[in-house]
Length: 94
Image (tube, rainbow, N blue to C red; front, top):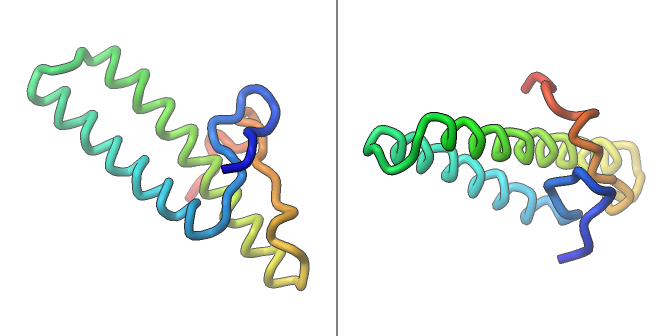
């Protein structure tokens, strides 16, 4: 995979299939964290910390995928899409 972007990025540049696979992995991670909490394998604080990291990465993945699709729709190279900083994409509504 390509090198990560600026500091604070949690997602590396990738193509659409890789982005979708990463999204699936992050969703599985969310489910696993909730199951671990229910089984008493992790604390609530640990679950919240790890969930926040997964949700941040999900925001960046969805944003990157949207950028790639928009660039393709308008005849631009999807590879020109950039992973945006966490501060810019966090809290986007799906």
